[in-house]
Image (cartoon, rainbow, N blue to C red; front, side):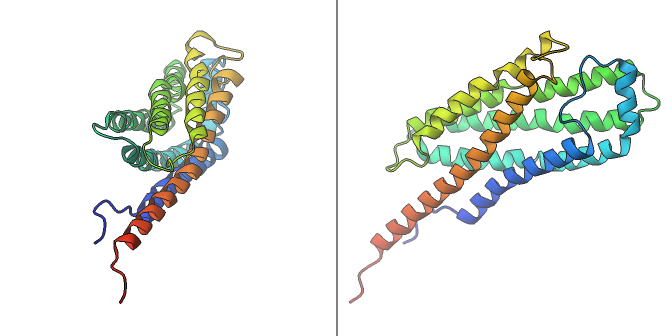
Length: 249
């Protein structure tokens, strides 16, 4: 008899792959099309910033459209991990449910990024440069200052791995500690409220480049280890089905 909870490894892996698509699309859109990796300096004058949007308005619009579609994959990618977290928990799955709430909230933050840039680029020649500056600042605060839900999700993954009752565990224990460290290392993104220039400005090494590298490096590492976890679950279920089959006479 087939197990009622048998994993659909194909769909699960497709969900994980969607996260890789998200990373590639984001780099292409925000980096190559929009030229917003790294961010424009928060020390730019309003007129200087406005001219960037005027000069590249079509590229920014296209980049925003790509990002708007791609950020939806955050939900599919993170839900693949959350489903595996559920398999690691016993009893009342508080870690799983908290992760669902955090991931849904995280998607809202993400979708506001391209939407706001698209509004700025919609009619940049007629907008007051100071309004454009405020809106652009808003986007980078949305991108970086909203780090806590993602740090908490990382921490919950780490706790779930350490409490995993499966033998062998679905993720190696080192993945738990990696998540804890990543949760700590993205904290400098929260310092952008205090600096216009330097290490912790929103174009700085500490507040942008380090959290950026940590976050997307974390996504890649979690993607690889989640593929492996899916394979472990599938192998365990296949072995269980084989044990349940009656012997041939």
